[in-house]
Image (cartoon, rainbow, N blue to C red):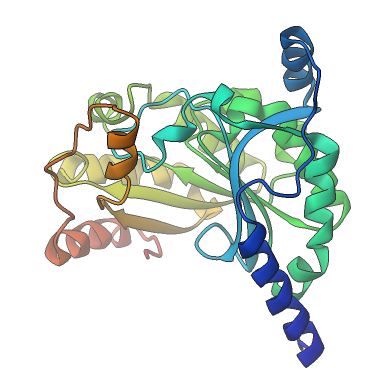
Length: 287
C-alpha cells in the first residue's frame, strides 16, 4: 500500500495526540445511574468498565492498534502484570456509543496501517456483550478486530459474536492441567474448547505462552502445550514465547497483594531457545 507524505504526517500527529490524552480521556461516562441500571447496561452491552486504553504499534495485532484494557478477570495468574484490572468496579464506566465514536475517529489511521481495535484486559470476555457490540460496529466500518483472551470465558461468545473477530491472541498458559491451575487458579479445558471453536470458524490465532522458570518451563508441560496448539491446526499463524519479567511486581506491592514470584528471575537465553525449539518441532512459526 502506498502511503502519502500527508497521510504519514497526519498519522504522526494523531499518534502524538493519543499519547498525550492517554488513559481514558475523551470517553463519555454516564452519570446518575443506579446500581441496578448500571448492571442492566453491562448485561446488554450498552456500558462497559474500562481500565485504560493505548494507541500504538506493538504486539497486540497487526498495524497500529487501539488496545482497550477492560476491567475484570476471573483468573489470578501468578505473573499478571496488571492486577489492578482484576476487579470490574475499579474501571471507568464508558458508554458504548462513546467507545464506537472513539474508534471511528481513528478509522483513517487503521486503514493506512492495516491496524484496528484490540480488546484486552483483565479479561475482555468478562464484558462480552459490550465487546461483541463494539466489534460488530468496527466490522461495519471495515476495521480489523482482535480479541486478547485466555479463552476461559469463551462460552460467553456466541458463534455470531465470533463472526466479528478477525484475530485472537489466545493465552495458552499451560498444557498440564495441574500446572494451569497453579498458574491461574482456573481450569484449562475452556481454553482448549475456545481455541477449537476459533479454528472451526476459520479465525486466525496467535498463541501466547509465558515462559516462567520453575513454573511453566517443564519440558513435558511445553510439549503438552504444543500438542494443544496442534488441535487448532492451520488457525495458528504463530506462537509467541514470552519470557517472564518483573515489570508487574511494583503493582502487586502497591495493591498490597502477596506476590508469589518475588524471587523468580527471567528465563535464560538457553531456556528460551529450548522452549522455542520445542514449538518449532511441532511445525509452528515461533517468535
